[in-house]
Image (cartoon, rainbow, N blue to C red; front, side, top):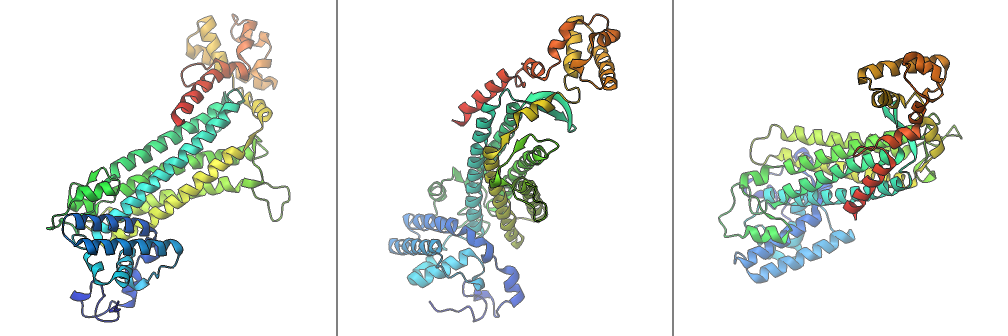
Length: 466
């Protein structure tokens, strides 16, 4: 191939131009440093397009065969790390096309018939985001499985439940873990929904108005695993809401991961002492030899900011763009790549930490009753057994807590005479509900924390995840 890039304009789009772009223009315009990640998608799209062009008679079968063989050779080079990426060729599309010309000659020029870089990049990016959603969903399912496995062993292990990070009511550790199974299940559903909505092929929209060639968009759509071709050529090349939706799902998922990571950080402190993590997911201190730092959890917590920031970044890029394509949209890829890189690493790290962490069951159980956590159980007993209105029972219970604090004892250790001074009809039977075990076991409503309910939740999710 003769390299005309040093002549007027650019060898692939230079006919209109009489001078080379300025160096700074080349620097700001080039995207090959990051969009080379779309190489596999770009080649797949080109293979489907070439096959369609041949079947519809737009290009000769011999040319299509040469194009297909050349693209396969390029894919092998890219996989082997020997492909000659060139900055002056701007992007992955031009790099592949230029290399194809070197390999097969003029026939390569027929590949771009009835296609624009606008629908080409929209296709490549949509294929990449679709696969990223599939990977994230798969990782979430694996994370749910290990959470369920951990919950099985701890469906009855007591721990404090918190509101405002204050002891509220006793729950079980299994119940706590199953809460995250629910959250991550919704995250997986969001990725599945996003994938279904984006599963339309923009290939064939060309620059913005479609093409006069008799192409078969259904053929290329199905060849690439899409449900159908997109319905409007302007929308096809200008839409990036598929990436925004995927990033929104990623941001919500990252926030959920961050919440669990924060709890792991808290649970590992000596003040909580609820779990331990091995050397595999912790680090030491350069100066304090006693330290075991939950760095993996802290980094998962931090990476949520990067994922959420990527959603904001792309939203800002897209918010003021008129139809159809603007070069601004070149900035869609870096935040999306970075977000899914961070999310996939976070999901892998969290899955590893859940498998690795060992609950300190006795420490959690000891903390479950702190802060008069069975106060609600006392109020419920007063309503159930004495017929008090709940607000009256709440008042009596508040006074009982105040008295227990004055005597520096738990509610379960408050003498019966003290309780009867507040409500004369109280009987010693009240003590049967004032232990953390009894409290947790009594929460038998659907979705509650009783071990029986937790086991029911576990059985349901095992069936879903099977």
